[in-house]
Image (cartoon, rainbow, N blue to C red):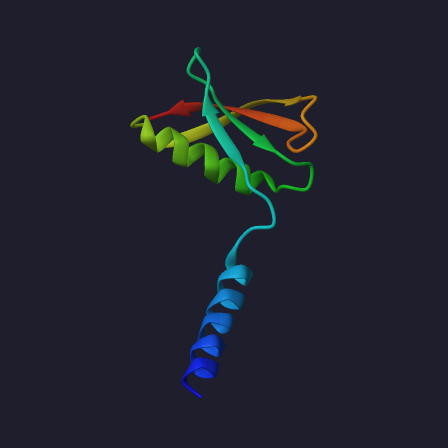
Length: 88
């Protein structure tokens, strides 16, 4: 009985965690010229990529991320790279 109860609690926790995660993962990086790039997929929303860029800018002590340009890549997993400039 105890084993079934523990299993049920773990299963429920796993389901709730899975519902809250995004279906894809956005990757941020900083270029040598100071721009922040976000590797993204075609179906990602602009607000999602903006939030990832702003989080990366906050690591650098800046408050905002301003969209600069979007580039296509040859990467199958992340075919688009959006570039952002960090501002105070």
